[in-house]
Image (cartoon, rainbow, N blue to C red):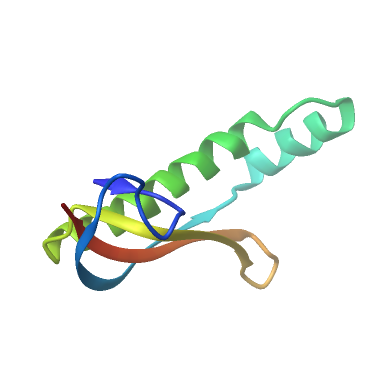
Length: 106
């Protein structure tokens, strides 16, 4: 499944619009990751555990969107938008939401 943030794919024409498709993933940050991230923030460096978890959530959201587009008969999604939102009473969860327009390319 071809996915792009652009409204069209250069060199390919859109022959059919199938509609908007979405994908979401919500992840929770556990205490152990928070503790290690705090230590890493204190001494410097990257929070690798968070990065890995965030990457996984983003991949899940994209896979969900691609699956929705495929079920509509599309072979691409254009105009993809990625949003991140902190959720929960203590901001302990992160939602990754993606959306775009499912299309058939010639």
